[in-house]
Image (tube, rainbow, N blue to C red; front, side, top):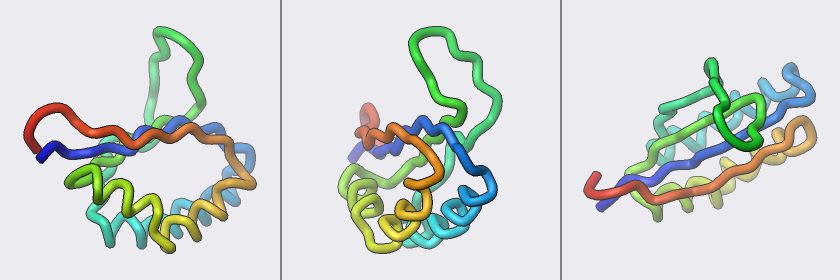
Length: 98
């Protein structure tokens, strides 16, 4: 079964308040086995529009990635993120076997 990934592109308007989101999202990622592959870091934009921060989180499969996003733990964290950032997030299934 292929793994799945959250791919997020984020602009943060209040870095101090955003830290509350980062602390809060840990519970959801721990519960659903989310593993950060990319979390910020230096980027080299080559094509198209982008945001200041890029994040890739790996999950065991598509159902788990979706369940994490829909979970009460993540939705509570997201409520902290929404007022202090603008984000694009897609959940995508990986290629091949996990």
